[in-house]
Length: 461
Image 1 (tube, rainbow, N blue to C red):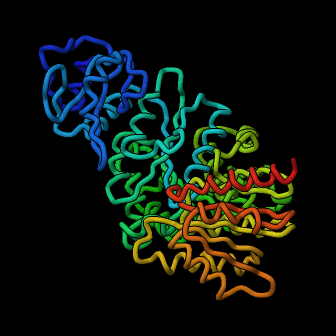
Image 2 (tube, helix red, strand yellow; image 1 turned 30 degrees about the vertical axis):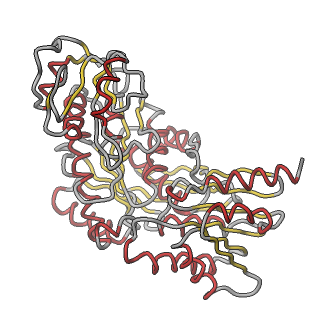
Image 3 (cartoon, one colour; image 1 turned 90 degrees about the vertical axis):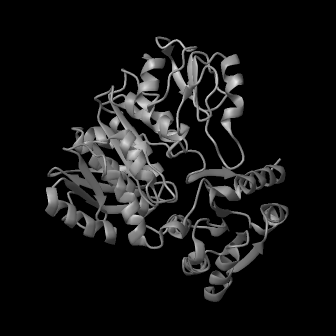
């Protein structure tokens, strides 16, 4: 990193003790003593069930050159809040670089859009992108600390579950391009309404560069209105659409090519190009358009954008389609909210064979949870999902929405736990089925995916 202990202390307003060498170089920053801490700054964080301050001695034993502390003591930089200090040092470090930074948020699709955007930009830039779920007030600084002089662009995902969180992330990232994919109902428990969610997501603009650009999904009703407002104010707005040719970047001739692939024609800068998209789903076209829009803003041509889109590989547990025995499994267990659930169901509906959905609880919906789970069940019934398997307490409302609206030979089952489901799932899934598995991350439905795979492997030797 090439910053000193003195630099870190000054960046976070910490009190530097006499028993630390202020000129010592810091090679990295860590919040976890399980990491390699040789030459690093250790920042102990506090959570509901842990306190990193208990591991400061261990950090030094593993080679840390310095540590922060809210409690004072020997060989520690004293700070009021280690979490705020983490952000302040990350901001100091980020400001050492002049590369363009793209920030992405939204209720659904932000991780896929991040990966697509990074794939596109990699055709012209060495691009750092957010890894895994490092998109919050702890994870985003960790990604910033991975910057070095070899990178020429960065794509950072910003997640949140309460107002003010993206404001803090924007303060660190100082983005040049801000993308909002959509405004759904994820985290409505904490934010009260879609309008409240929009306000929280729009915090991404709070520290955008003076000449920065907002990239907004013109197919989202709230973002479309926001685009009109922002364009009237300063004009630095670009919209994309899978439906409206008046958008700055848009798509048409959207064609499904089976469960695994689709294609569309992207129109931008008075040119057009056909691209192949994996995985399927109209929502994927929207994600592709967001990435293409960023590519255009960053000076890439449509041929480079096409190459980046077609090189995209979905992240693990995100619309990951695999074959096991005689069934296809759509593994989308990384996370879920009502909007992404319905999008995944629409993909499943395109399968030519027997369709089955194994759906679990969606969290952080508060008092809206019964209605929103019911809506998902109704959507599954209306999409002609043949077999529905529900897992968890809240998913009982998915079960009810399905049974109230099903017809013909559609069938539904409900299990309170994933373990109960696991005991029965291989009996309930018919041969030659396409199976969607999806739930909020905390449900751990990768257990069901593995159970299905083992069962099919046993049946087929």
